[in-house]
Image 1 (cartoon, rainbow, N blue to C red):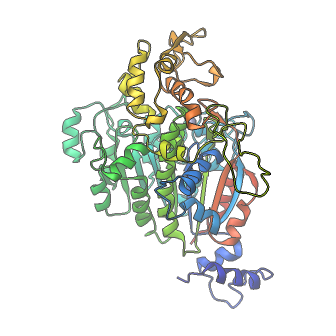
Image 2 (cartoon, rainbow, N blue to C red; image 1 turned 180 degrees about the vertical axis):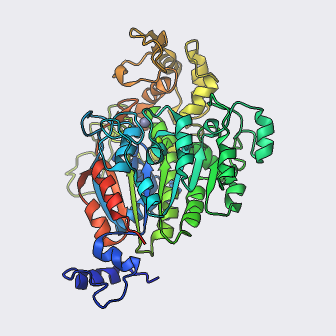
Length: 552
Ligand code: MG
Ligand code: ZN
């Protein structure tokens, strides 16, 4: 296969652009690479979704990478930056479109709109704006004979991957989503969430039978007796439950489930990589490991492939307003981008698009009035003897290193306070101990601040039967409290972020999603990627991705 460099490709484009089918006018059959140049079509499409990765979240990664005094990326650029430098960038609106529109999107609707190029409805999986099942790009690729893959560091049945390979009225039907994925026959499925694949059973015996670690096979959310892992094996899938098993897997179909629910969070992953904590590091692959393996397997299909890779916990860090966790999730996702970049950088037959489904949390570094720095003398000849003394605190770069130094995610802090995440009786002292054991010393909370973190208020709008809002009391959030909707879950942690906001120079605006346009990185043949360099909507991205796929 002839591979063209970008420079060569531009030369070819220049000579071919005025001709119709210039690759075949001498009666030779155009290679896929040549066709990519003429038609804006490619053999392979790789879509990477940073869930909740708005421009602000990318900004945190880039600020850390470039300007943290001790940045772990000091000697290199991020892989997102490489895509930006060598590809194209755009922005994309992402709200629900069509007959039942809204202003703000959730991950299910957003992924559905990306996957189908059609308007969809909130919290639905693979349905159009009136609730009809519609073809996804993964299904289209499969119908074209291509191999298909889905990867996430959350549950493989979670909303984002689900929208590419399932059709269900609500994202919470994860058992049914697993069945849809298996029925469709997605070739490579890698992530967490075994609890939706196994029945209630003797988990220790099943783990032994599957040669799986006990932390992977320990729980079921199913109400029937189906063991979808065994069904997958019977249907020809290889199975993997550890990094070693993932690396050793061969064959063209692979189901890898590495946790009963979500995989390691970004902070755990960083520590595991550096050998600094043991928790469940043992044998869990990284998002990058899974991405490399999927590319190995899928690229053996001569018809090409479609692969979706999700950094799913960027969103989770956003919902709990956890800046340290967010940074580590962005670093983890960027490693997966690196694996894709290395695989694709010299190819001309593959389109890579990296984007987000929406922004989460209204994150932002912000200037403030806390500890305004002392004035100092500058040597510049424009100062005219005046002291350099801005009126506000515009934030110090060493804050970036302190944010990186966080040793536990807010999820783990919540678990340290109460293993069941029931905070109705939690005390300020418990919060103070748990928070201060996990944050950089400059972000430690005081007694007064821990009182604010533990504070509760009556829920004056109990919604019976609601997964989160049926509780009698809530964390006391004084600002934008209607935008904090997970009271037994992440909301108390928003109070931690408020306590340490001035020390971090960070302000979060909510515990849900915002409708900000999100970044779009596109890498591949010029004729294909140029169309992404615009202000678009996710429906347009879905249409462009589907339109770019070519049959062999
Ligand atoms: Mg997601
Ligand atoms: Zn979310």
